[in-house]
Image 1 (cartoon, rainbow, N blue to C red):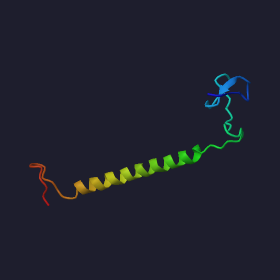
Image 2: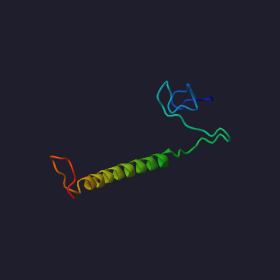
Image 3: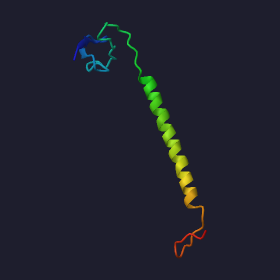
Image 4: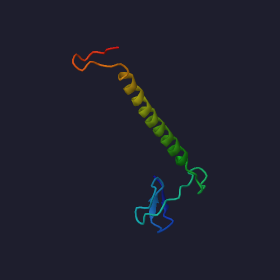
Length: 86
């Protein structure tokens, strides 16, 4: 666990932290190999793909429920003996 100074208040902050525990300021990520301070995050694309998968599963579940409901109510049932009439 490496420490770096906070850009806002100067306190030592872990490089794995997302914010300074002292002031709450954001921690700037740096590459451990070359020291580059402009490290990009790929979480935006990952979050988008998670949302698309979630929405797709949600829509698929709703469509599946309607198809299942339509399949079980396709034939009339006798209320007295609980048997299918068709």
